[in-house]
Image (cartoon, rainbow, N blue to C red):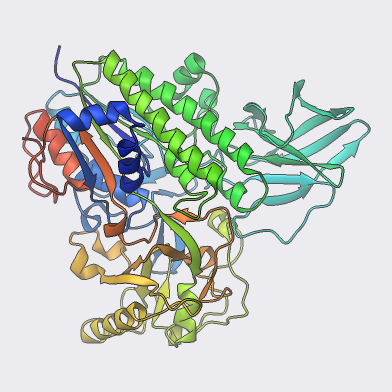
Length: 586
């Protein structure tokens, strides 16, 4: 049998949290790996955002070469933000990863690879033999995914996250929900019998999500949904998840071979083919309780575990790299000493569950080499920062502070960005969770900051003022560092990056509205949502991931970008000279 390598990520598994669980004796299988081999913190990407991090894993290169810098990029011609992981022209999706992955030399050497739920793999890389795409897979309409809330009287005020508020139609003993889907609508008929609500003959639980259900729209397209029911003033509200792609009728290039999603559904049951199916945004909007959130996260994790183990058991693949998102999704609901006890208990339960999964893999495949990793750690997020507001108040961005803020609906083609901004007098603006862009002459349309010395001086001025910025409530420094992208990155894709990279201290993160260009919220304010922890924008030096190997490694301080060249060395291949990472195997 040829040598096999399994690289399994537990997305977001924080190094300090894992170290404490090891010390408490809760992770026997990971402890056994550490005893005979290696356990080390794993340096994450800058910024510590999953698209950036896994692009480094796949390519072994820094963002200036692989081309992913944030969850959101901007078009310099319009300054409009867009999802960074892919482009969509209305007909075709294009993966924005700008560098070759480790799959290319492996394929050339006849080594077969499988990538399961790895972010930044939508659409799949050309040279991977099997792919079930992860973070980046859109909903059935090709967008980030919007839930729909049906009630007796719709609240038109909305929310930054963009859940659609709609009214249902009541007819006798049933409710009709006109669901917007991929280019058409479908009407759901929810029957009421006493205090029970039934959809397609299936009872919908209260204050929880019902089972996955297949919906057919007027244009013949399909989607997978789950419905959450609650009573408000004795009247029902029906919350419908985004219309996720149905794996039995997948119209998206989200897997290879093309029938993989269908085969997994037939073997293991329905699951949403989605980049982020867990209802974090709904929890943050206050539309569901934590119990319903935890249950849905477990449901998604159960499907992921089954898919990964199924593919690990297929001996046709020499390298299997997989990602489990359970820890990351729960951690966003709370992390650190002030987090709710039930969230912290869930997180520890996720680690214990993952350790059992590792043991199951080792028992089933004793001859395979196993590496365990995570892409980043976590930090509490108690204070939100509107970077665009600060730029406006300090004269760098000429904006109407009373203009309405955009929300996530705008990424789906609705609403207006940059309302009330005078670009002829603006020198800088922020897009995404960790970037400031100069309004650069010759790059931005109508840019006014001259390249060269004026641009360098403006960057230095912003760096000095932002690193000196203090929270007016407690006097703490908001930013640990502010970095110049020209000094941090190198490569042909550097022009996609922001000019400054914001590295926050724990407790702080960019405000949601500011990430889309909004200026309507205070510069610093309390974050009172149940999205109370994050890694995006936190200084990456403070939130490393984890790395376990059954054998020892060379040197100290492994990093995400070291994984690709290490995979190549494992299979006896030389690393690409253009890679920034180094092999860490002895």
